[in-house]
Image (tube, rainbow, N blue to C red; front, side, top):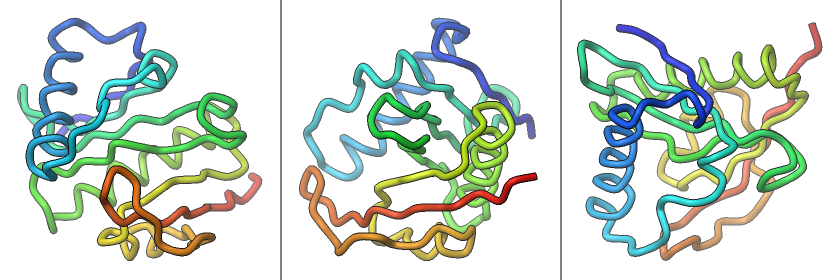
Length: 148
């Protein structure tokens, strides 16, 4: 299994196609949520994925501070095979990347409520009540990163 991280400007057309195809399959088709899945934040984000052969097993994007909010943020988190630890693994990679490469002191996310426990195990703490985003329950969470 390979861990890959690329800024949007570094993605090949084939990589971008695979990422968008996966994201739309999960967030638009599977979750039956009609919304603008591809957005401007993609163009300034870092795209991280775990790959085996030519298959993406897990994916997320790291959005630099100042794009959507003051803090670094994670989004579009997908584990293709669920309950296998892939979601945890990709988020751990993203946390390390945000801290080491982007100098993040904290990360803020809007997590789908059903995966709140995954983020809590990684140190995120809820800082909002549950709210609906595109018809799906979410909660805003924050992770304070220790200085090294």
